[in-house]
Image (cartoon, rainbow, N blue to C red; front, side):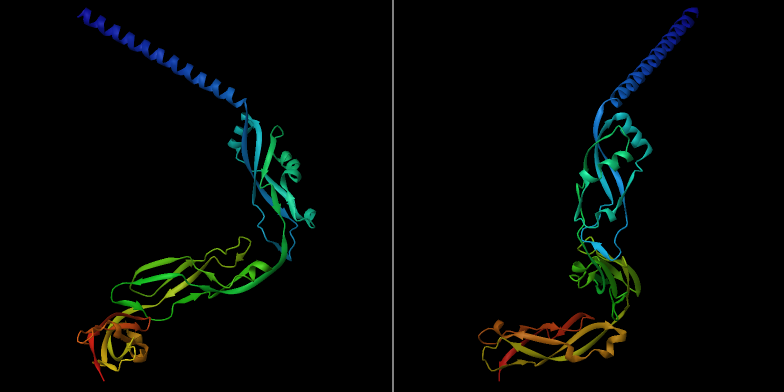
Length: 322
């Protein structure tokens, strides 16, 4: 028993020594890491700092063809300490550009004009290498506003046995664009973003975003429009129409039978308003055999856009000489 206790004491002693050694090793490793970081922060580095821009005394009756940049990318040479401090505090630097000083100029050379003010905003030990954009263009034109229509770019897929029952309503139908006169005059309409709506089985109103104008200096008074899509259940009905013959090439022929019945689906509210004259069915005489004995498939080439799911009877008909 004394030997067992002695062995256990030895094991405990070894564990305590190992823990102590690992603790010392960890502290040494941490100290080395801190010294390495401190040494690194003392070195000089190249970095890019973002500085927000604010413009004052902008002419009210004119606008710029090129949007004024909202921030400048400033490449600086500085110690790691300064860059680390800037990163820790977060860059809240902002430069004010008084546009009255450039009323008769066509551009601002940022690297020549803005360096001193930026140097005052940043840490004094930071050396400014370059500024991007290096040129701020100031081409100006009279400001103009104009109302243009909204063009809907929307694919609507209704659920089975449902269809669009009336005109799709857009609110507003017109939006106002504003900006440089020459650019505003080029815009004839504003499109919505391409969208797809599936499985519609009831009337619903959606918000659809507008596409941004082609020119960045143009502004639109509304970012989106409301689109109301009226949906109603479909019913099946039918109509009888004459069959027209194309590509006869001077032949004196006629269809037999001369009319076909078109079965189709339409929303209930439009069933009685759909006229037969809105449908057009044809057969192509060039597809007939020399004897004219083989039936030719009937094609439906015109129909109201609010009708769906067509069946034609008979599907094929023959040609015969008059």
